[in-house]
Image 1 (cartoon, one colour):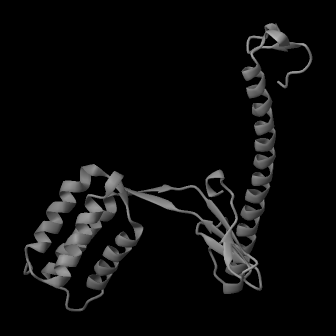
Image 2 (spheres, rainbow, N blue to C red):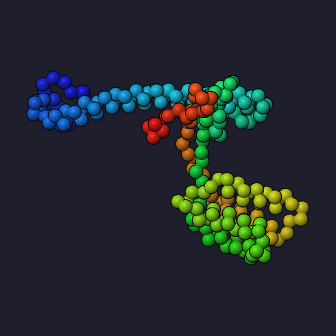
Image 3 (cartoon, rainbow, N blue to C red):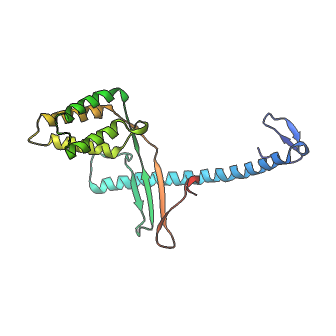
Length: 215
């Protein structure tokens, strides 16, 4: 509540004469109200930006699906998108990240299967060294979060082996290892991100500050 007059009220509703209140506390009260007033305005405008972006994302997504004549993809978008002005002086990036985590109960099973696969190769093989490091990074990723790009790379190797007409027992071991890995991966939907870039007076795109940490 904004205080006024000669009598103020504290958090318990007790009336306190203004003269009895420390000048420092009165100064804090003045600034607290100014800040919250500005913060509420920012909240209102940020909600407007969010609502406009969400509506644009859904409408443009639906238009692209219709334009591409893709059936069965109706509904709300599940992927990110960049919405640009015709002259490319404005870019609105919408991200919908998924956080991949690894079920630790599967770690040993996956590791054993990959070790079985690696044991069938020359340890000095450059390709095997690369895959071994890739697997190591994924199984022991910091904080339990998994790099989606590395997961896709691992799956690409598996698909290549699956589609090979000369698939051997070694390839089967790798396919089984990645299949177990897939069972261990858990996907948690992340928060939608909105990033707005606009061309400045120098013709370069600059990021519009939508978070106080951007200022």
